[in-house]
Amino acid sequence: MKSIADLGDLRGQRVLVRCDLNVPLDGTTITDDGRIRASVPTLTTLRDAGAKVVVLAHLGRPKGEVNPKYSLAPAAARLGELLGSEVRLATDVVGESARTTVAALADGEVAMLENVRYEPGEESKDEAVRGALADRYAELGDVFVSDGFGVVHRKQASVYDLASRLPSAAGGLVEAEVTVLQRLTEEPQRPYVVVLGGAKVSDKLAVIANLLKTADTLVVGGGMVFTFLAAQGHEVGKSLLETDQLDVVKGYLDEAAATGKQILLPTDIVVAPDFKADAPPTVVAADAIPADQLGLDIGPESSRAFAAVIAQARTVFWNGPMGVAEWEAFAGGTRAVAQALTEVHGLSVVGGGDSAAAVRDLGFADDAFGHISTGGGASLEYLEGKTLPGLAVLDTTDARKA
Ligand SMILES: Nc1ncnc2c1ncn2[C@@H]1O[C@H](COP(=O)(O)OP(=O)(O)O)[C@@H](O)[C@H]1O
Ligand SMILES: O=C(OP(=O)(O)O)[C@H](O)COP(=O)(O)O
Image (cartoon, rainbow, N blue to C red; front, side, top):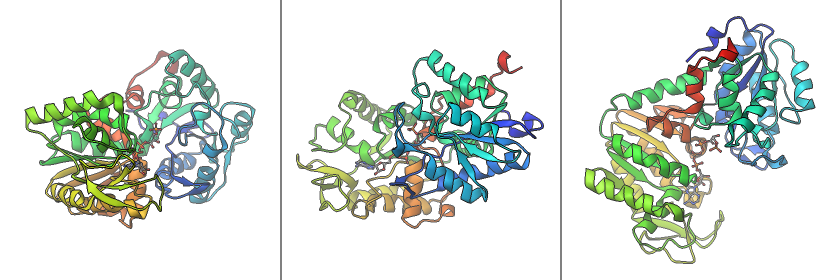
């Protein structure tokens, strides 16, 4: 992959930078600014080089519609604070406001476009539709820097298509993330344990087939659990469930049994009647979830079992909270797993926006882990051995860039 240094003299150049600023919000208050902080070094490098810096980023999943709930305004304000200079936010993505905001930039200044996912073309499956949007992004810049590691697994206009339209390079964050993850793919020390949780269940179920080939043990918590329990024939009440994945999950359980790999599932679950912070929690056996309750955390027995397996590993990758860790009553499993990772003699990596936010919120210092990655899904797909579109496109040369 090309680096920023390979892009030549950037003074006066308009540099489009794809960042992942998808931070957790409580209303308009950022509850963890880790991804914004992680974006600062690359932006500072570009400013110091005299570039006119234009940040492209997404927040949440507004699905191609303008929705103020997903505005990047809080992220632009925080980034301005961290950079020590104002970051002007265009009120649109590729419209009049974007054009005038970029045109007003002086060398060394930073501006941001509104949430790229306000544009229906950003996430379109139709390459021509994405390409048309990427053409409009490309009009706003002279070169492109890909630094949103958390989104490089997405074949989206500002991640993938834009890179083939302008001279492009990987930013320092993407380079640093790939360097650490390479250590996990090239002969990880064993036992190698992968811990999966969180709420993006269908994405994460898809990575298990390949992870079963490389990891020794797969530990499953969070919202993933209930599709496994249902596949084993258990009642899961109102818990998160991917009904169309039940056969796939049965296949994973069979494959693990046949190949001697371990898929470790919780034996007890913290349930509640509603998805609420103050819903009364009860611990039940994993095979006895009441029909009118939903699982919001792994139980204490499972926490102990998971922690024991993790603490004796030599390599651990963890993505996805074990429960709704934002709420204290359902944070026990996530706390226990985080603590176990800090005790690993070897390499421990935490990945994902919410996972990183959870460990910080629970009071763990960043340096208690070997590495905290800004990407959850992106890390998992990298570890699977998949070609990530946003990285692969940085390797290709394109006649249009010459
Ligand atoms: N049992 C559960 N039911 C519903 N949501 C859950 C459950 N366990 C964890 N979560 C939620 O998963 C979210 C994080 O999932 P995800 O986005 O997949 O992780 P990451 O951002 O670390 O990749 C958190 O907001 C957490 O509340
Ligand atoms: O939060 C993100 O990923 P993660 O939850 O896998 O860490 C990225 O910003 C990507 O977001 P997406 O999963 O909506 O494409």
